[in-house]
Amino acid sequence: MADHTHRHALMDESFYVLYGSYTVTCGDQVFDAFEGDLVHLPKGIPHKYAAGPDGGQKLILATLGGLEDFFDDLDGGMEPGELARKHHIEFLD
Image (cartoon, one colour):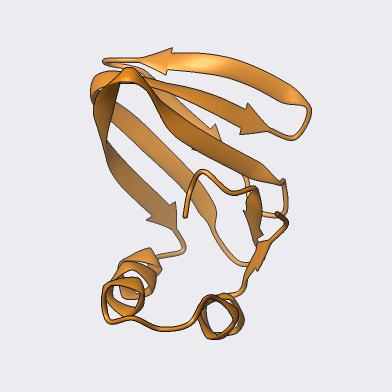
């Protein structure tokens, strides 16, 4: 779902690139993040990210907590609209 532009109403999202790379869009900024980089995506700012051509792995951090519940619900097959309402995430595309 991260390859879709979205924004969080209640939490900042950050991630640490464990390996590979990501192309990140945050507001009107577009940049690449590589192994060892920490990316911060403030609440309320539309953002998206996609793994680079060789893939990537990241460790996601959320402040306030609770983002893990989103991924549990996503894995459980919850519909996108219900996911968005329950977790205060607005999908913009």
